[in-house]
Image (cartoon, rainbow, N blue to C red; front, side, top):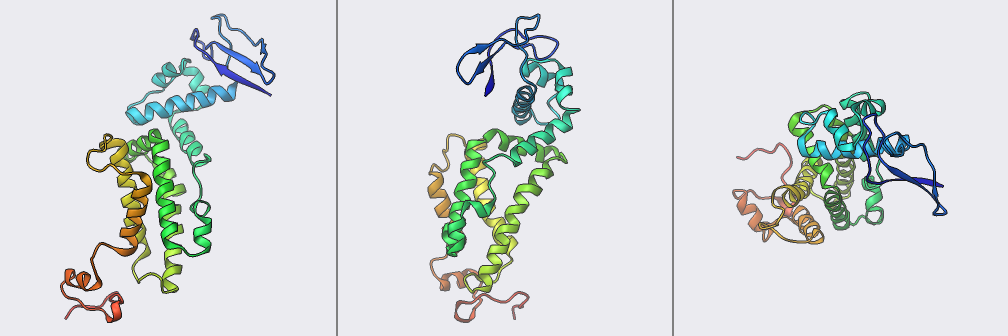
Length: 268
């Protein structure tokens, strides 16, 4: 097994002229094709990944429109022609980033995050586990969170790729779970999409505050574990002190044995 390690060295204008050393699994250095600039050509797949990582960093800092392929090439230490050799255009490079992230190991399917909680119908464990997994992922990959924010603000069509593959999947999964629990009598009758929106809203807003806006956590400084537990508590139990207090806050509407008013029922 051989892996290529990139080291600091001369940067060739012809693309791929960075100094590198090939190291074998046995630990011995082996010779490689040496360029005139004194460096060693990085393997094609390694170069492709390097360009991808550099592009993602620049896109997350400046946005898609604010980043040029020339800047990506300079930051990667290659020629612009080398960038185009691996990616036909900037759109393809951006698409590759979304593909890479969507297929990465840290993007688990919701059902794989809390399988035991799902099997035993433990609502609290389901929502707490999902919230904690999302917050940890945001914290682990702040760069990608910034990239998605830029994409949304720019209205870039490729941002929809992440939405369709990940966010919509969460809506479908949780929506189906909530409908099942409603049929089983464990949750009251409310549009599941509204429940999911409220849940994701708490979690994502918390991450955005911590990682982008209030990085010193002056407004709220709690662990992800506690945040996940508290958000789940709010979702499942609300914040009213009692059912009576909840009815009072709704203008005195009454429900039978604490059951929710049916949809479409008009006040007299």
